[in-house]
Length: 327
Image 1 (cartoon, rainbow, N blue to C red):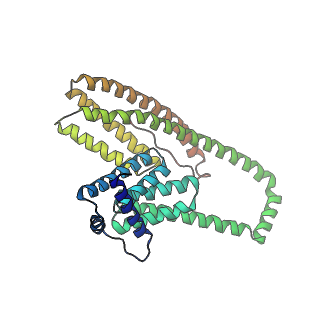
Image 2: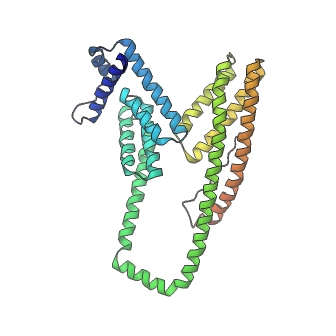
Image 3: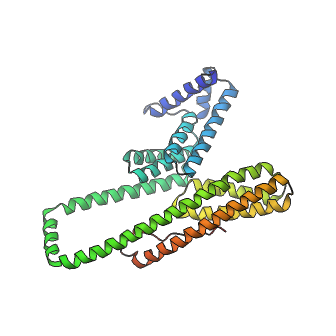
């Protein structure tokens, strides 16, 4: 283990100890720096620590983008253990914990998501995403409370007796209606899962595009204001995509695809470089794949949305899905 790694580990141990302590107030970043300097950390090593924290934060964003929520959580946690004031890393921890709770129904991560969101608000009281996460968590808590309340009521003797009486009177009709409802619900579930699978394939072919775009940026040196503006626009949309899911993610992916196509068209017109031309051919191929998979997704979503419009009043948990409008 190098000297830098030993100092980094000591720094992390100190941060973790402060975070776990309920009595000791968390030190500011400058105060942490002073302590590290007293322990022999140089200015250059301190900067290396902060840079490593940012690298971990960026890696966590990538994990979250590809829905590797547990990896996103642990990597963001690593970033915060170095620099506890990386607000975006804290938000990623809260978001990742929320996703893990929603997908695995693990109550521990519901508590973690709530704690991380509150920590974000301590640092940045105006951070909207933290407020949104707390609102989602409160909704989950109310749903669980309502479900428990219903179960208790159903367990009452009077309710049980009433159900038995109604079952005797209406059994034939309700049995038939139940079968119809179950059939429709299974059809909706199948259609929704099919749509989700098709969207996953769209994002899968997008990964090829996402690997090629950075290569294009590396080869492109332009003073064109329009190209620079488009580059900034794509980076901004990518950052937004990391923090959302569901319908909003689909809409932002469509917007990002349009921006990428506009950007590559502008670069193509302003460059005659042979390497760029070769890369453009590969990008055009990836765009075509995205268009094909996007159409397949839209076809499946159309069928699903028709079912929701027909039966949505009976099954409010199924919502209309957006179409992918990327070219």
